[in-house]
Amino acid sequence: MFKVADSVTSFKDLVQWLLEKLAADFCQQVETVLAEIENQREREESLKGWESIGPRERTLVSLFGMEIRFRPRGYRQRRPDGSWAYRYPLDEMLGLLPEERFCPLVQELAVELAARMSFREAATVLREHLRVPVSHQEVHRWLQEAGQERDRQFREEVQAVFERGQAPESEGRGAEMVVIEADGMYIPLQRERQRVAELKLAVMHEGWEAESPAGERFRLMNKAVWAGYMQAEAFWERGDICFAQRYDPEKVGRVIVNGDGAEWIKEARKHFSNVELYLDPFHRNRAIQEALGFAPDLVRRALNAVRSGDLKGLGRVLNEAVAVARGEDQVK
Image 1 (cartoon, rainbow, N blue to C red):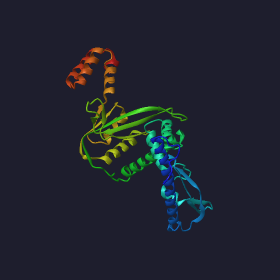
Image 2: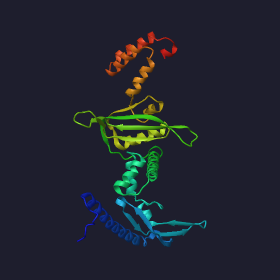
Image 3: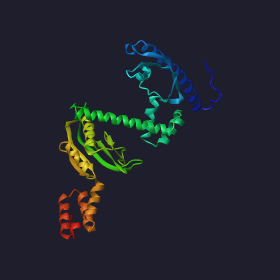
Image 4: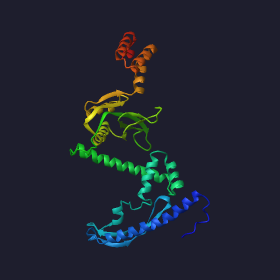
């Protein structure tokens, strides 16, 4: 039996009090398991030739304020140049960075939160609701590290496919239509020679479905995203791999690339056979307004023809525009 703390005056207090007790017991269990793993690894063949330098204290902060303390044993070995190489096998096995203070579970959750809210908001959620004493700077660092790791994985995948000729593993999905919506955004750079850089972004999906019975809101079906600061060829190589990892080309009816007509978007034709290129409605309408702006009535009629799918009617409007245009700029 145990005595409930006097501070417990509500159900919320009770849950928090129990979580603290369970967390303390859990930490002890984890520390016991880590000590046993350390003892087992001490006898491994891979440590032959390495000199033990003894254990060091280490603390990892996890969810609900849990502090897991353990003592990974270190080893050293003399290099040919006379310097020492150091290693901590337990840290290596667990994938722990040498100076990291938070467990990977905290970092993973922080990255997920930071993808949906600001760094400060993510840190506040972790502190106030999960009792993790983390700063927004640490959340920012973890997100950067996660992005760098994903970029490294992408580069390895591109090299495997386009340099070594390895076929990526595929889900083998089929779809009547796969839509790739691509766009670029110019971002100002700080402390860089280049003043701005274009962030290229693509969203691949299989169409839209209603989120509610009323059909007032829609969401993308089977969405996948890739993005980055890169040249067009590298961007579409990643898109090619994303597509191949998901679909069997023989089972896909149509591949549609939707964008603003930029040249780098048109390079999708090099990577997707029989791809259909479209201007998205915003840029399509803007192009019509810019081209026919000298005649508002023609703009209205052209937009109506496009919206109703009347290509012949659109052709008549464009022919009329050429006939009434004044000056070389308007004819173009």
